[in-house]
Structure formats: C-alpha cells, structure tokens
Length: 143
Image 1 (cartoon, rainbow, N blue to C red):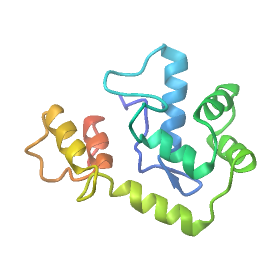
Image 2: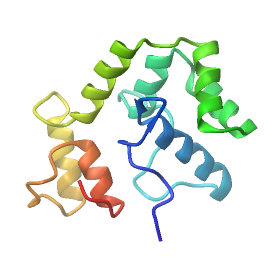
Image 3: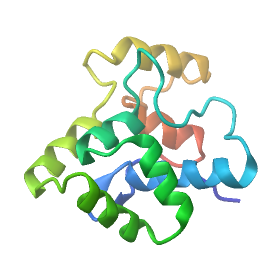
Image 4: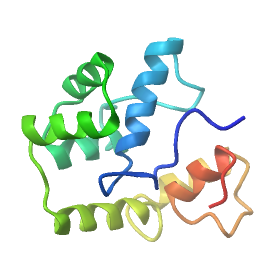
C-alpha cells in the first residue's frame, strides 16, 4: 500500500510541497484526522511547510483549505492561488524549491531536524540529511 500523502519532492507546476499540502487537506476531510505526527496548517510560533507555501503564493491557509475542499485538480487549485494571491516567477519558484529541499541541512532548522530524526528512531541513518529525506523514509520511500 502506498502512503496517502505524496512526497514533498513531488511538484505541481514546478512547485514542491504544494501537492502534499493538498493531500493532507483532503485526507483530513475524508478521515477526520491525519496520521500521528502530522499537522495541517499553521502552528503558533513555528514556520511550517504549509505556512511557507501560503507565503509564497500569498494566500491564507484557511482559504486554500476551503478552495481545496470545493474540489478540482491540483493544477486548478494552484491556478486559483495564482489568481487570488500571487503567481511567483520561475526564479522565485526555483529559489523556494531549493530552500525547501535543503531544509534541515546545516541551517537554523538543523536542531529540530536532528530531534525529529531521533524521535523517529532514525538517528543512525547518515543518508537522511533533510526534512524531505526524513518524510520520505518515514513514509516508506527512499531518501
């Protein structure tokens, strides 16, 4: 069985993480809760991947959530974000993706990454160096 939430590496019209957030929104609506350890939306005092996507697209998470639950393809929902918020140019998307893909590797998020990796029982895995790697391994994919 494949995991119901796609890899953060999977892209919708070149943007990493976006599809994963839509998966989480849909799964929460369908099942009433996400798997343990997953969160949806914004967490007070913390910058989440959901928050970063919303900042990139200049949309409120609650609005993205509502639009997603109206239905439509990932591409249609992303187009709605572009029209409602902003459409970043290819250079901003490239910078965003690079930042997100490396999150946890030698940056201010490293302490949190190390803690989460240890909590997952994966502290000895040298091949897991970013949050993307950690998510993929926890969900049965190769880093």
